[in-house]
Image (cartoon, rainbow, N blue to C red):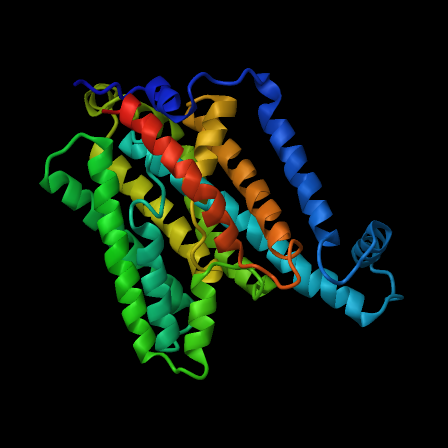
Length: 353
């Protein structure tokens, strides 16, 4: 059976007809993100009123002398601000990476975790942690193994010469399982009194230990690939139509594919190195973005980043407020994303067979 690889088919395989939201979709998403961002400062076990937050922030901006307890400043600027910024960064990066993978492979089931990028990057990060490497070295190993995992997935799919979406998904599951097992094996080398508990907790996916320095170090390897993807957005759109059409329009297919793979994997590795395993964000959010703004990658890109940042903020707020103890955000995203993936699998089987 022939496969329709147009952007419209990718959109139809995701969610069916596009919602009619008009040209106000992106501004509305940005406003919602700002509202959730501001409201997130009020969420937590330590009660802080909106008036207090505004007064402290305004005083800091204006350079006024401190008239509030040190505990309030610690809560706002050293506890909540880093994890709020990290939630936006992680959600935006994973969502954009998922959108890029889906357009590149013309497959609505693609996401960092489905291609092996997430567990490959996690293996590289854990490798750096076990051998107590610097943050930069850990970031580099996460990127290298994330890219290696994606390459293995693609090679397995090409080896069997299949054009079916399910084959690529199964290849990604195999590669992910391998790196997940390799990550578990690395735990035997970790210090059981110090490193091992931290690794186990980190792999669940969470933002509770994030610092402003972590956010600052991660922002660059996310922002630069995002800017590159936006710059080549028209080439990504052409690739989603087909290789022959791309060649006709003068697009260097191999170079563009490699560029998209490197950028998406670098973003995934960067955020995985600070947050651990966050499930399904890169699969769920791009579909929601296409449902709202259509399949044009120039609109899917900002929509995915805005929706991803908002989604991760909401999940993080829930993780630290719905129970007496904090629940790792990776657990919540998995609980929501797993049933959603079953739905997408059924839809994709019909639309991409």
